[in-house]
Length: 426
Ligand SMILES: [Zn+2]
Image (cartoon, rainbow, N blue to C red; front, side, top):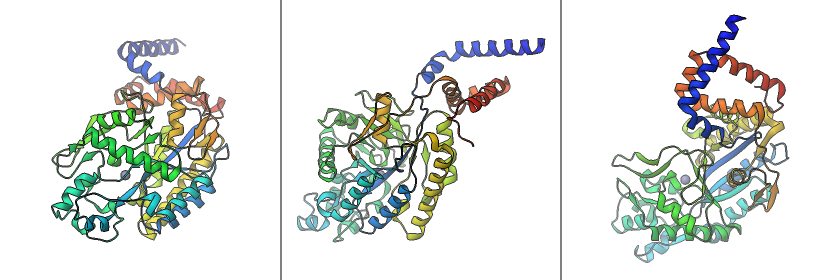
């Protein structure tokens, strides 16, 4: 009994010392948003303009998503980041590359657009802006005028849809990657890019996008100013947990904001969102790794936001089949283990919850309201808070092991498991 009392005293001293040492961090972490629902977002970049066969691939995703739904009977849904135009190479050849001309999703890819709209009506596809295009058009035009071999094979084609074949630095949109290090793009130019993107997005889907993810995760403070000052304000910015404003001489990305948490605000008041899981099977990032990342997010009371690019589904038939199979593995897992509290949603809806946790969420694409997500409280909140400390801070993790604080935490986890129906059977 005496030993037990001494142990309690020892742990109390450790926790008190920890509070003196890290109280700012502890308070900040405690006051972050925590979800009781298991919210799953599947984000997919680069949809939009492309080849006709993309429609079949999209249809495969739609069929799969219809088969899996959450506890409010909503099917799995893709938050699709849209690329809205391609170069009109014939017009540009005719004007001797004096002016950049576009083929747009709303005018030149109507069958594809109708496919996207069909999936919206089925509840499996929510578009948001990626960019009017996936490159810096004035830079590409300049290279075409100079007969630069990085672009001439493309611009000499009558019909060029494969922008993903461009050199990686050329795929940035809000920075100029025609040479390394990249150069910032002027505010005036970014205003034009954003204006064109919102206009074309509205032409396609009849609503304005309140959320965005910058091509190649390359954007800067000027971009955020443009998005904030425009009449159609961006409220939510999807990130990978940092902001990159350029690439150096060797092509390495430069982070000017190194750590972003979901719910952090830009200096203009927009909310950052953070992707925390990857399912990119074409690059070897398979379903089992993604499942581990989903479990990690849910333990911490975070939404799990998966990144899965279009190319996983639009390359060869074999890659597509493999990607769909893995996607089904993911959906089978989350519906099987978290079904009673699982919520499928899109990124702007998560943004809405972060802004107003009590309110129902409105989906602009579907013109439909979905019930508010539930926030976490009680023992579940304490454990999710401790999981965040555990995963984020190596020193605290080591301290809890060395001082055996993991023992009382294990008891808390067990109590939570017994008392709380939220916990899945993992
Ligand atoms: Zn992209």
